[in-house]
Image (cartoon, rainbow, N blue to C red; front, side):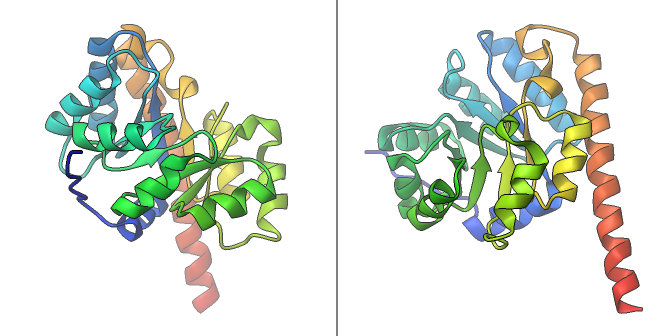
Length: 230
């Protein structure tokens, strides 16, 4: 079994996610296009990126991105289901894990000190994910109930850091932030056809739109805290 080196703690991951608020999700069948799209996102200002293990040559892509990504960018593995997935992904260079559901990968990631974004939908699953060691909870599929459902979940679970994933465009991202999301996971509304060899300039423009939503929300947060202290 390959030894795992952890570059940062789950606490560091949580703080970074709270600051950056955007998690890009790569699913692709063209490894070269996936790498090009990922590097374009990093250059545009996206700092957290997940490569789903359903992607063709996902581990090879993770290894290449771990080598090429700027030092302040994190590359994680998504669709992580098993303990073996955790070890293979970490050996390739993934610095965090993302699961679609409650799986053995959550506890194994936590045991290794790796941050893990664990998939959950119901209150029971959310609590189970946190007990298993989830750093943050991936609300999936977010399209099931949207921001209103997130708000309802946060009423009894206000301390859980949620990252909704599924159908999140720039408008919906703003709504999730307003409902209390720590961050959002963004796939096809951000990537479009870029991970299949499509237009990288259009990808960069979409990234700028998401970053503008994030920046506005962060500034509104600062303004509210400043007003509260006045």
